[in-house]
Image (cartoon, rainbow, N blue to C red; front, side):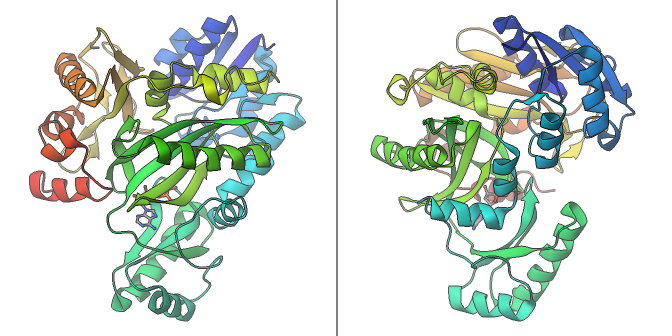
Length: 449
Ligand code: ADP
């Protein structure tokens, strides 16, 4: 049993992990940059260690600083949250070399899934259906043009090292291929230091459906259904819900089993998410995330489980605390991501919070590190909170979301709250009939930049 866990992250996800630790009777250690001395995760943890100056590269991404903080505090394990070092195989290796436990999968699994070409090959070999596309990387423009002609346009050029929606370019026809291919490559080089790209058929009306999986690292695994994350801006999720409004029980059982079997076969350990595009009743693998996702609370709501507690237990070597038959869906949950951003351009809006009021009541959860008088630093991600609602069904969850949004007050900075007030009036959102491109079109018409 761990006595002390260090959380190598900040913001709402650091609080999320601290809360799980506290319920399990485990001491928590926060790390922070000098810009985050007054942050909520520092206040809430049992101990804290300053690990460097504001820039992420010199603090939350600094492996020596984080390992030193473990040594100083005597923490036995590290929870990485999401982002930062959560999918860094080298970090996992170093953590283990220091006799510490990484709360997450093995370095080998992170490495396989972190390279999207290898991830796709692995998925295919495990029986997971994939988006049709190139076999491996595409090295030159001539090959890209030939593949485009063979596959039929539109196609999407994606970075094998990609993440966060970057390094992706669409070519709608042959004339767009040269530009798309060359920009995808140079963006990938600049963002990830690796310009290898691959090509996929670009699906025009898919939904983004992702399956939550959990492995015990010894060949046991379960799935916790799917989340629909189709409301996206620039390939980034804006609102997520579970279960998916168009996924049938049969489809859930079928794709869930494929994913759980794959994870079991890999002897994967801990939480993971297998992401698909879903079009005309078919699932197409796009990638696997080897960590806890931002949107995990919607899954927790409908299954009544604590995924972070489970991550910690599995890292301690315990078996999964639930079997597949224990996992029954109860109701519907929706999450909206509250970002400190100014509409219509979504420009970051850091600054001081003059007033903060969190909604409450039945079926409402707020995961946020905000407080009255807090100053949002300009150095990090603009996500400042997540509002999650749970109802007996989708209509009840929607009316609860409306009600909770009306109670939520964040003054002093611009936020994306008005976007959700507007979206909840839209027929497509109310009926759930949207695909991954719907929000971009809506923004063009309703919030022209
Ligand atoms: P990242 O790791 O950068 O998030 P993903 O591969 O997960 O990249 O894709 C992110 C989003 O990009 C998807 O949810 C989807 O909206 C879009 N996308 C990716 N691949 C395709 C494709 N083949 N066709 C259409 N859209 C795609």
